[in-house]
Length: 65
Image 1: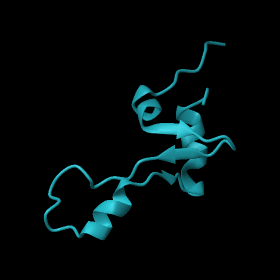
Image 2 (image 1 turned 180 degrees about the horizontal axis):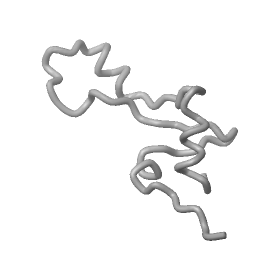
Image 3 (image 1 turned 90 degrees about the vertical axis):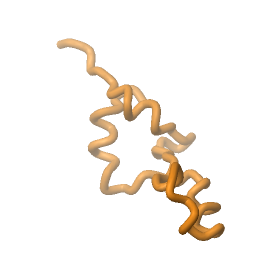
Image 4 (image 1 turned 180 degrees about the vertical axis):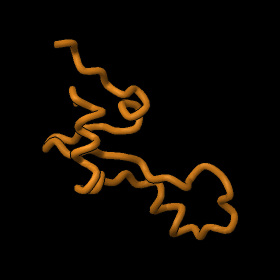
């Protein structure tokens, strides 16, 4: 059986925490920022944990993470 391949686009966007959860950065922070409040932009800077509903699919595309 051949080796499973990691999806490189996903590997660049996700990191694994010590407990095995997937950490990601938030979207909507690159442009059109003038209409967004300071509080919203500040909260977009923080990383967050991937939702549990997506974990099964994420483990398929990141088999060695």
